[in-house]
Length: 195
Image 1 (cartoon, helix red, strand yellow):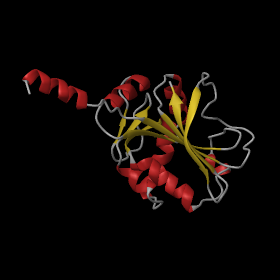
Image 2 (cartoon, rainbow, N blue to C red; image 1 turned 90 degrees about the vertical axis):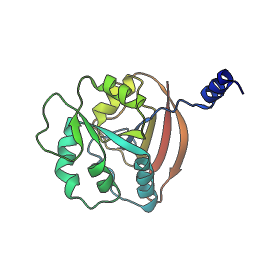
Image 3 (cartoon, rainbow, N blue to C red; image 1 turned 30 degrees about the vertical axis):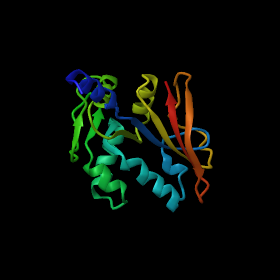
Image 4 (cartoon, helix red, strand yellow; image 1 turned 135 degrees about the horizontal axis):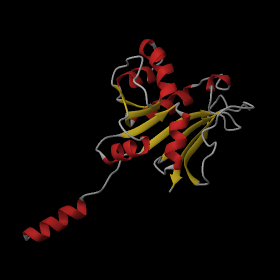
């Protein structure tokens, strides 16, 4: 085989695998994500396994400032596994304009704009990039077309008010990847965002 043919074959066998941005949220049936402890009132093994599956492929997390402040006070001493070990060890990138008041292992402030930072992070080698609990981060990245998947746990409860992940979002399509119902009645739905 000639050198030119070897280069062509190598190029054909190379795939451009990009990291995915995966937002995981707990929602009420009416779409509220804020203060999920108001409507996530039961837990079961299937829902727990869904959370473990979500974090298994992630090696970076993007958080908003409010989520960071709340979680930096809670998770370092938590024994809720496997999420505690994951979130305490994983690199955490925080969208904020102010210095972080509380230190947390592997946490750093995003330098520059959120959308550009996450686009750059996606282009680097690594696992999936997670968004957990940060509604405004998910909204911003959804509007910019940066979120690839949504992993939702939808409770059979109407919250009756509060901030939702899709509040103010532009119209767009979602493609169901997989879905099931847990023994506690939660809809476990994974969606691909149609760009």
